[in-house]
Figure (spheres, rainbow, N blue to C red):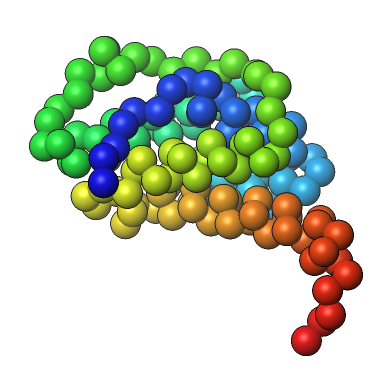
Length: 138
């Protein structure tokens, strides 16, 4: 498996969806992130969360290739709202998670939180599908 550092637009998509969804179906995610010390109600809070995602991804790539990426080269993350729908947000989050499946990263609490959020999003998408709504219960 190869790993790479995701683009800022990948993280922007994830955070934009978190920001837009926090007052609708995203209360579970907002609560879990707040318990972990992240505030998604402010631009600064989203930037901190995005930087944490970028750092986790960089750590994974470092472990995969036994290297030490220069954090200045990788850069500082600054959140920017961009257009996104929930399918793209989920795909972007799953991409980030996949790129972080290296070394000890999957054992870290922040990784586990991102993974749990992705499954919450998957459930919400499936739950809203007509085929799911009309399927027999049991």
